[in-house]
Picture 1 (cartoon, each protein chain N blue to C red):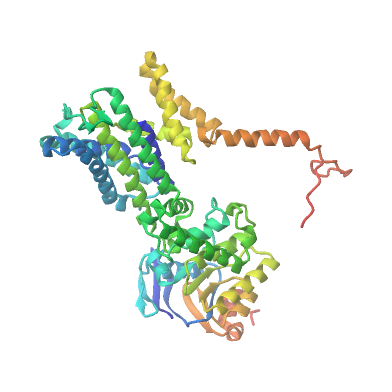
Picture 2 (picture 1 turned 120 degrees about the vertical axis):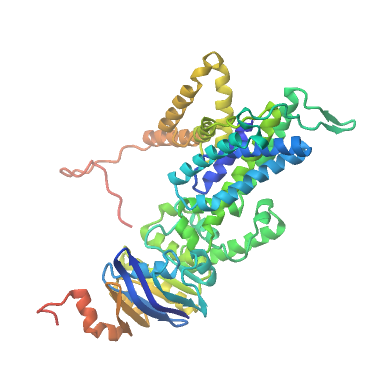
Length: 254
Length: 310
């Protein structure tokens, strides 16, 4: 589904990512883990078109989308979430979603200004879809709350809901569980599982190991911009290089 | 009234998170376009006026693509330079624009003559007043419709978090250029109207200070609400009339009003009713709710009971 070949990014002389190959299969949750500064978020920025890679290719569903603009990539079906800046704070929760239902149906410039009947029908459809997305993520009771007033966990979930509004085929989740309490973590994990069941492929960056191990079918480990391991959660748990990367090597290391 | 259109259209650009200071330049473009179309090509002024707006919008969309890639203050700075560039071009291109002396004796708009119902000859200031009124109402109607459409919502979303808007497939650059062009369209029309009204145009008619005044109208009125720039333009256009004897001090006066508004009414005049309402509610609450009983605790905070955790 998503094929990434030899992805490399230099910031000045520093290689943030070097020669990373990753492939996401249709309908799987692929985990991307690694210590801080390993290049995980850079990886997302390259795939979603926020940054241009120095080298390498990104191929999605047979199309080369390397260094395309973010909104083009979103149109193709790859939508990402952000760690920060992930909501529109001065809109209500519902407005957040309505705005993000941008791609379908396609609302023309003139029909929205002149408020034609066709436009009214489309807006109705958008409203309907927005409400069902809110129901899916469990924020339907808070539709009219100002987004800035949400609790942290709800803000993160709203961030995922915004991405869903763009109807992704592949969803890139950047640490969706960070800063959540235990209850919110289990709710969000259940949500990610539901999304996977509805046939959305997911690429997941996560620091919460237990969550990553239980959600993902396969995991890729990055360290200092290089891929050091790839495999099922059990293989990763037993990989000595991964343990070294996380705990450091030394005479006491196993 | 012209100022109302200017301030409101500037607000539309602002809605997408870009502070344009090119309104003066766009007015100059509109003024020259309309004047030259009428005087050199013999076009009716009614056709020239919308074309003046389109010319400004077209220029805005051309320069917009490189400009809107800059964010915040940097965008504002290039728009100032753009405005100055327009003025310089008008001064240097003597064959077309008459150089720095400008163009005089611009014809008045063609008279409207609907038999037995209405005849407006545009010979008096009063006739222009009605034209300005109609122009303002149409402009405000369009601006209001744009703001309350999906486009307006998208502009505001881009203003709040543009990277997020981009990530769900919104062409943020395109929308920013669109906002810039629509706002400039109205500046162009206004410039065209102005030149026919004054019947003369010179390159420095709409100076940088003039653009700043529009900005002040918008800020003083309150940029968060649609009514804000309208209110600000009306009040600040009428007030200086009372200061006629002190005309040289008008910029001082504007500066004083602006500072006072920023300090005491951060949401502008349009935000005043809501703020007073909130203030009164606060006062009432303080009176009606008795102070919470203090707990007999030693050094227990400020004597306020903590809310129970849910």
